Image (cartoon, rainbow, N blue to C red; front, side):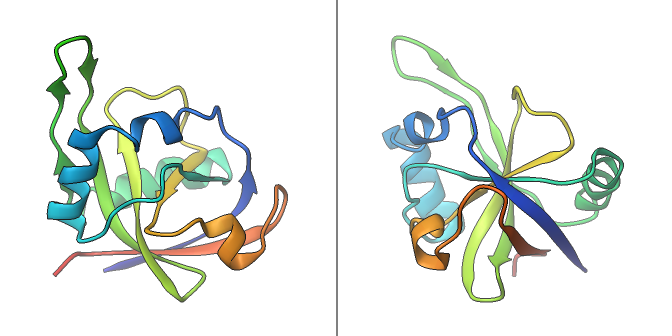
Length: 135
């Protein structure tokens, strides 16, 4: 099964860079997704009703879990990941943290490269994300 999503790029809260710089998350992404993540997420906005439907559809895909951890100072939540292909060319993942400020209308995307630069995209631009089962 494949899910195709079109959304509008927007600047998020800026927390993705912090979390994707944590060695435990990096190690799990390398082991479970097969790439070292660029330290930040690309956020896209979709219609909220469409987002609710997509989250339901995602339940039928294989989930890849990043386990929660404690680094001695603070607790970091688990993250559910789904393999994805961005703009039909770059492989990455759609992620959903167990605790997030975003509602169903936002998808967060990680990849091994800085997607904004690679695709020359800015806030308000449209991108396509294909979410699929991992092999």
